[in-house]
Image (cartoon, rainbow, N blue to C red; front, side, top):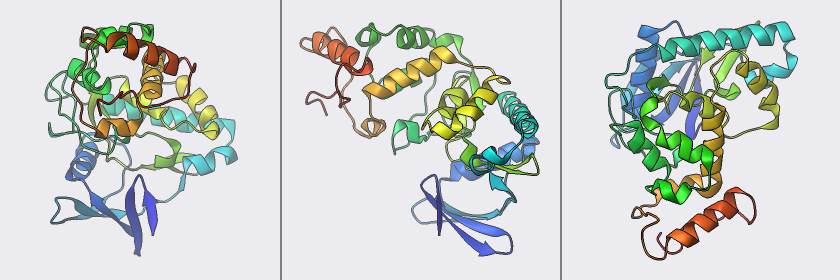
Length: 283
């Protein structure tokens, strides 16, 4: 049995496979993208509801090889062609109109899910500012005063627009054959997110073999270097699984928190000390 993005996938013959225990939002997103774009995605032959609310999806087995495997065998001309094709598909996604501007969450205005933010569903959020506050784990901006990227990005929350986002556009989720994209898979994290999220998530889970892919993609898509730097800084301070732990919001005005938190954050993100959880008993 194969395993992809935490979900079990089993080939059942007849060029079909079953992806087990998917959240219903994945099927909704796939059908939405199929109806509104020309992006090649697996056909869904059936969706079977489980008692726990999840679904088992019977999917088309997309022909081809994942791009991470095929990349080193491609000519430069093929690489250029594939990233240009992918950029076109991303443009189609970004042209889809959100039902509510500023909303962050799943396609149908429900909660979102992204392994960058732990293992639980989150939101939905009525504004990008609220989403940014969640990304900071509820901490106020003054606790991040030492980092200009985080403060700059999060203070201009209202300047960003919402875009439909795959949110896991890594080479592992792109299938290619004969120099063409045959399918884009794993839509479980997709939804409405800030415009930069597709870009910063593409870099999440960095691998050395992706460097050339990143280099080629940066030539043909809108880049968000400040937002990427901010996200990397926040990732140094908060382990992704910290988002699964509830805790009260904190501000620099709370007695005893300001000096400790700001200094610990500064030291961790600047690599002055080993990375650790910023909890001091709050969790």
